[in-house]
Amino acid sequence: MSRAWNFSAGPAAIPEAVLRRAQSELLDWNGGGASVMELSHRGKAFMELAARAEQDLRDLMGIPDGYRVLFLQGGATQHFAQIPMNLAAEGASADYVVTGHWGEKAVREASPYVTARVAASSADGGYVDVPPRASWDLNPAASYVHITTNETIHGIEMRDIPDVGNVPLVADMSSDILSAPIDVSRFGLIYAGAQKNIGPSGLVIMIVRDDLLARPGRPMAKIFRYAEHAANDSMLNTPNTWGWYLAGLTFQWLKEQGGVVAMGERNRIKAQKLYDAIDGSDGYYSAPVAVPARSRMNVRFGIHDSALDALFVQESADAGLMALKGHKALGGLRASLYNAVPEEAVDALIAFMQDFRRRH
Image 1: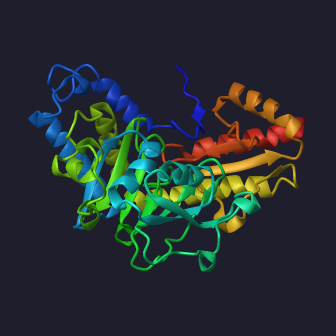
Image 2 (image 1 turned 30 degrees about the horizontal axis):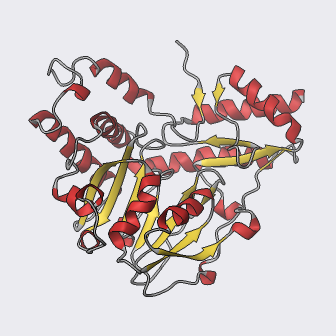
């Protein structure tokens, strides 16, 4: 078997060491005579697994007291709607800063449950930059301010945590969580789909401040209320045990790599190498995103002649470089450089780009 270098935007690469460990434990996990997927989520063994995964995440991110960590289902899109259900009273408003496709979708999904105000947007410029903080029209009475810290499709990264006053800051970190150190205390709620930097799809990690869990929200079934999930240690219903297990293995792997400080430096080097190759190609390749807003996780780029895009995608796949086609909404090319993508993969991509330019 030969594994390719995987640049998929999501579901994305999982560390090979994690996959190999999961493979070795698939039929008999922890000496229990069955896979982790076949054991009770309320049994002692799985409860210990769950507790370790949470503690490892707390250690990695420096999550302070006063925050709960939830292991939920649904994917981030479900929580675009569920967050206003929990954090906003009926008739209330919330502010959204929109820097790409997922910010747009967050507004649409929230709109049935809250007056979703677009406080700032870079849509007019084609989503190639982050609106300057001074231009944000924030409402001090908003239920929360929502941002997308990294836009997977448009290749935009919000490098600095914005100051939004006393209004809770809510962040979709699906594609950059655990990619570098952050100050969790600056946020009221962080959420992330697992399928980019954590593990398999179908799991959502949420970090939420206790006072926000105490908000009354609006009438809803218990299954939608975050406070109920927190009160039941994320086991209000049967959780995604496989996803939780793989997330725990990934957290252990990250600790072995030196944690998020070391990972942040690796990610900086990987992205800088690729952007340097693009910028140094004498215009053959180009990256449309403004330099200060360039994502370290999702490098969006193109060829001077877009007619060559399909050939680039085909030839790169033949060379063992997976998933370099840009999103269907934008076209072009895209390389996702999540934590599990090693520097060697970036080196291989750069070598292929140089060879492709020479031949075409």
